[in-house]
Image (cartoon, rainbow, N blue to C red):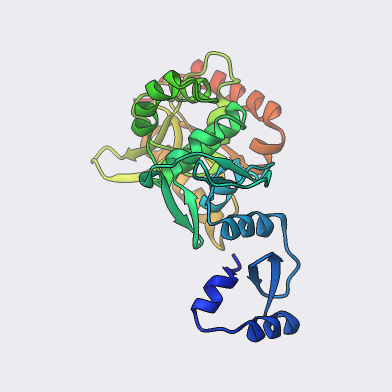
Length: 294
């Protein structure tokens, strides 16, 4: 991400007004708002302008902007407000909201002051639907930006203060299997969500370690139903040699367990989920018909 700076920061660093004007003329940087510059001559994106608003007002990136800066799945920049300012700070900009954030709810992302994962998820619960909030939450848990326990600990106070989105947080967390690890990719989260469309299919075990009869680790599979003798492997964007490795690992798991494998790719899970759910249901039915593996 390009770097942003204010006139005050530049002057404090030893630059002069003439140097700022020279840099702007030569395309070394460009003025975004009054007193705010962005490095480079490339056209400004909506994300650039949102970050510039944070830098210019000396606030904290929040909402959709914070989600994008933190790299949360399922989050887009969306509509303002993008900036949180302390109560009493005067501004008429629609990109800002006012709230007193505790210091432990603020972090830095790409050099920009930003609400941390815990606070960002609380804010996003008011604007995202259940599916996208779950995607954001699972990625935050995976990156250790917050945890299920921390979010659950916030629920009583959020309910008492009638914080928008509190019910969504409670509802989505309640459907997670107790103690389940976070998913490790957006594709995995989408597959977990897709599984719920298959009648009678329980939540899968996530990141299951499969061992052979001698107790040696064979592989760790994305999602599995040991009681059915079924595991799912998900194919994202492959590096060179990845398909061969995946096929070898799948063979090793089948040899060690006798389970059936259902393999799906990004396009199947993301673009044709109804068809994919139907295919998964067919594999589940085959598992239920065959003798359970030892």
